[in-house]
Image (cartoon, rainbow, N blue to C red; front, side, top):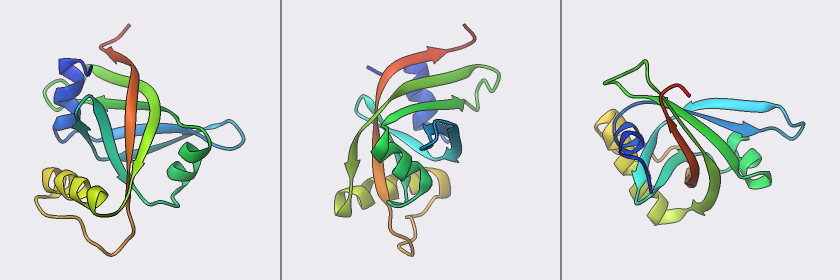
Length: 127
């Protein structure tokens, strides 16, 4: 279950920073758009992007966000990409995310997929 503070942050327009593991074991971090879908977190990416390739090999992620309401309170989610969504179902989610961040549907110029994060640990604030 997503903690209320985590849900508010991912349902808002905060940018997430997603960390994945490169083939050599070093970290790879990129900013991205996120949203909640049930008790999971979704993001969009290119199917052949570095992060997608990393996650297909090793699904572990760390996602950090700061909400606009309190940018000094870190929100960290650790978990795994449990599912990849493609096709029309993915585009429906992508358009919802784009509407939130851009106010319009996402361009169809590039191929996109949706990664679904299953949270395993959620940290709000400094521990």
